[in-house]
Image (cartoon, rainbow, N blue to C red):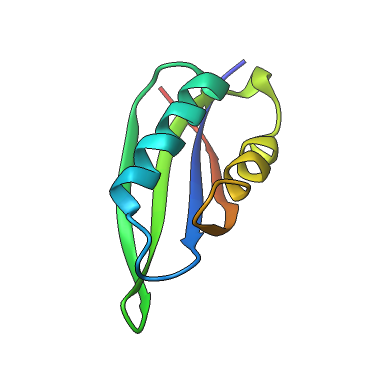
Length: 92
C-alpha cells in the first residue's frame, strides 16, 4: 500500500482557545493513530480573531479512513469541529 497525505482542519470553540496546547494534544492522537511521521501545522485566520488549525500528516493507506481520527479530535475540549479537508496519495 502507498502513503497518503492527510489534512485535518480543526475549528476551536472560541478565539480564547490555546491553539498550541490543542496542537500538542492532537499531534499525540495522530501519532497514536498513524504512527510517527512527518507533520506540518499552520493556523488559518477565519474571522474576528478566530483561527483554525490545519495539520498535515502522512499515514499508510492500509490503516483505513482518517475520518475516525477526525471524530476523535472533534471530542477534545475546546474543539468545535474537526474535518478531513484533503487526502492525497504520496508519490515517490
